[in-house]
Length: 247
Ligand SMILES: CSCCC(=O)C(=O)COP(=O)(O)O
Image (tube, rainbow, N blue to C red; front, top):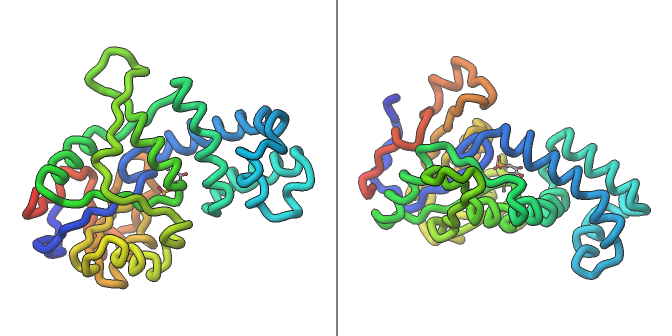
């Protein structure tokens, strides 16, 4: 598809995760259920453990009166896909054991690693902005499925490709323009030099509103875009379609 925005000045490529670089189904059908299944044992064994209490105590008081109350609340928030930081931090904590035991690894879309490598080699700063916590983002990039191996559990660690990591704690909510201003400040470039890629039109609009360049990434199992959205925004099905002057 023809991209209408001028991408001549781009120095930073900021990427969303779910529905942009990996399938929504990995997050909804693998990661979320794993956290729900792992939680009861953690609550039983670590309720008062100093390594766990910061996660527990970040929840509102009414939901941490007992392990059962916390479990029920986490299940409710997960079902409604609420992007609140205390849930996202707890999920990251719970996902670590799943990655380390090889219960799963990260299925990136096939165009993602080649394009990130190309952009990095060209000197562009690839960065992540996700509702998932920075801790969870780093786990995800540390355990990428190695498609060159016949072993389905083989992984590659590609954290080195990412220059900066942003979540709702260090940048703010993804649909608010102030979050994108903050990120531009943190990466120390003017907003028009940042290209934000996301499956979520509201996030794309928030980035455009502060002068970033932004493109909707439309992957096979993503929410359908309306005809109006397809006309109004630049939309790509693969990162390969995005030609940047420096890569
Ligand atoms: C860090 S991977 C887990 C993704 C996640 O928890 C999530 O809520 C996805 O949010 P995104 O902003 O990447 O769509």
